[in-house]
Image (cartoon, rainbow, N blue to C red; front, side):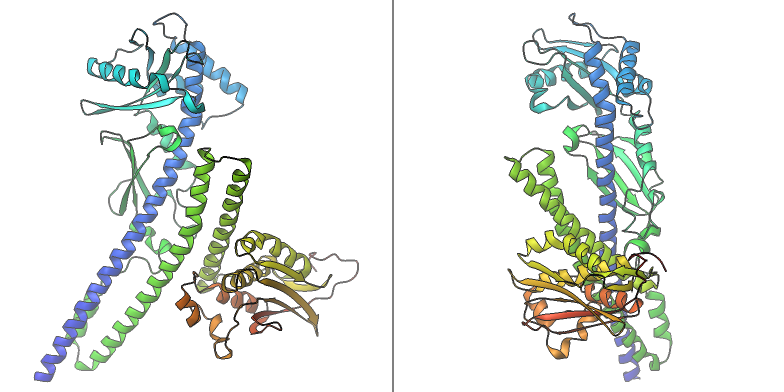
Amino acid sequence: MVLLLASLLLILVLAWQAVDAVRSHRAATAAVLQDFAALAGGEFIRRATASVGFNGYFPLITALRQVTPAEAGALPERERLVQSIDASLSSRDSRIEELDARHLGRNLALRLIRYEPETRRLDSDVPLPAPLADDLEKALASVAAHIGEGGQAYQAIHRVVDGEAHSFVMARLVAGKEKQTLVGFEVSLEDLGAWFRRILQRAPMLPPSLGHGQVGNEHISLALLDAAGRERFRAGPFSTGFTAEVPFGDAYQGIFEGMKARVSLDEAAAPALVIGGLPRSRLPLLLCLLVLTLGFVAAGIRQLRHERALAALRSDFVSRVSHELRTPLTQIRMFAETLLLDRVRSEEERRKSLEIIDREARRLGHLVENILQFSRGERGGVRLDLRPHDLAALVQDAVEGFQPLARRARATLESDVPAHLIATVDENAVRQILLNLLDNAAKYGPEGQRIRVGALGENGLCRLWVEDQGPGIPAHERERVWEPFRRLTRVEDAAIAGTGIGLSVVRELAILQGGACWVEEAPGGGARFVVELRSAVLPASRAPGEQA
């Protein structure tokens, strides 16, 4: 009885640990899904601010400046304003987000505003409530001298009066500072809902690559909160899911500053976004183990160990991938904002910023391609198009595409591939193999190294290799490096970034093309990664790349 009670106590302790591990894993997964919701909210903000700012506020404020009479206190008629917008848009040959000019002129502008700083006279075609008029007049008096500076066509002003949020868009009636008369309009926040609904219908808020094309806007609920916290727009039920609030901030001249986008991601999208989906409770299984005989205790312990190992592997992989994706995204965003805000001091700095954006975008694309290929391989969904191709052309294309990343590692690329060496391969697969091997060589080799790409055809086979001048790979670990998530001990100790799936993708693509791969010592030191593929002999009249 004592042994039985001790066994039951042990099972209870293990059950508690399992429940706590699942709860912790569920919390971590929920945090990741909330990050995806925030990502969708950021994409909505980007589209909404750019669309409304350029296609809504800009044509309206431009037309308002053109048709406003010069006489003091005079405001234009709505019909003239609509006609001016219509004529302006016709000259631009633009559909303006499927909203016509009359909709813009009559609905988006709740009130037309005119303000003369010299006399502090404030006029509106629709009467303003006294508290709002006083507050707006004070705000315009303080910012009148700065409106239009820095090349901005207009300036947004946001106020909260008596618990109600109001947004105004103002511009100078005449360029220059001789006469500082301001004209503008109060934005109809309710009318923005129709615009936002069209933005949601245009394209998914999350990139298709994140959810393998299975996560669309139907899995996203979105609400727009004004500066006073009042909900102005809603799409979706917000019944269940993972919610994040993303502020609009100063995006696009701060046209929605103070507002927030509340985004909720449906739990049904979790399996497509996170490996393993949202973990479910193991409590029923553990309760059954308590009722079963002591012979199942060992099975329960083994199941727990397996669960912990799987959770650790999944957590480590998600952590590595998140870090690898976040780094180029941060670089792209930082230098893109630098260019958007025109903070460069010379054309050389502008060119370097664009080079960094191009380089990090290539790096990000390479990482995403690897993750997608690895995911397809796990599901057995890889389909290749094997055709005769000229290897020299494929190698040259891959080397040129990797040049920006090689320059970052201060590495020199050399290729030595015989002309007219034909192999029966999938063009995209060979390109991904080469990019993975080149990235591996640049990442683990020393700075200033020379990376060589070569090929040789003999006995009906083509051997393609990439060699570096790094420390090489010990003989007992040369087979282990091709396994998923496996990395050399010295690499882990050196904290070199990586997902651990690049070489496994290379081996999988090589096998799918009827080939093989291995690693050996390079003649000049370092490691040489070899991929063996089938060669093809074409008639002289057939050009490489044509289907047999």
